[in-house]
Length: 151
Image (cartoon, rainbow, N blue to C red):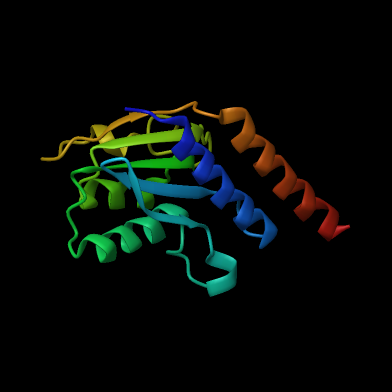
């Protein structure tokens, strides 16, 4: 069940990404009401295309729980997951995902494609639009920074 405090933690992670000049996406994984992993994008810093917030959070959660099946967890993320991240969520068996802003360019939870509705043994329940305004404000700041940097 959605809990606003976890989305606030994800937004704080996105703010950290923004401070590091990364695309401002934050993710949090919760199990039994306890945050077991949180992360933000670090692709620029690490020079690694896989370092999306969701993938890093999943990696951290698997290490925390000493296993790859996160079927008792839920994820909060500030932006609709892309195809890579949605696939990682399915493969990690995360049953519930709550996200902030919809991504009309790369969204894989219904905006462009829907990885969660593909024929698969494991189904993910998802809902977006939580704290969408706050998530989009961070994106606006980031892209404004990039535009100003170019001029």
